[in-house]
Length: 192
Image 1 (cartoon, rainbow, N blue to C red):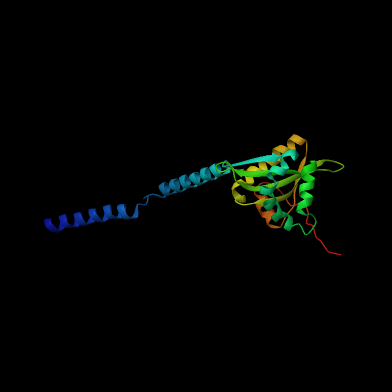
Image 2 (tube, rainbow, N blue to C red):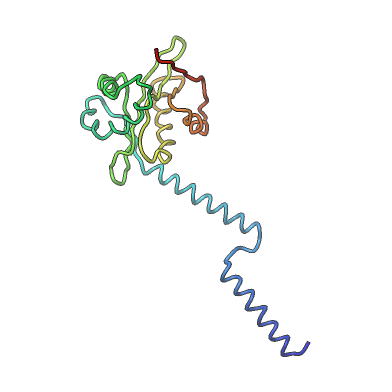
């Protein structure tokens, strides 16, 4: 090969490789690509943790129920609507005002807006007690569910409960399975 052809070939090869790096901007080795993927995954997990701490979950004392009820009623109403007519929203308010049921409020810490609500109550079985989660409603549930489940578990342990119970549609089984809940039994209804 002549000298001019060799220099031209080298320049073209050099421009191809630098052009590929600039346009593709992809790592060359498999291990580097895996490291970048891991880093992105960890960043995504960190964002999830940040969003989880962007909420505050507090129980509502019965004497403060009237002040927050207009803000939490729409969230609980959605859950009541799925109860097959077994409970009305007035029943929830009455049980919460006597302390039979505890209402929890989920609010966004940045804006103070209420994002959801849920209720708990103690069930005393002959051999053990359980904390039941009856109604859950709200928006952005996937962002605050884990935090709510932790609050529920802490509250149940504080009360001396040995078990948690939850009621809801079949989709809850798929959601709660990731949090180590198990399906105990199915409930079937027939109107008479």
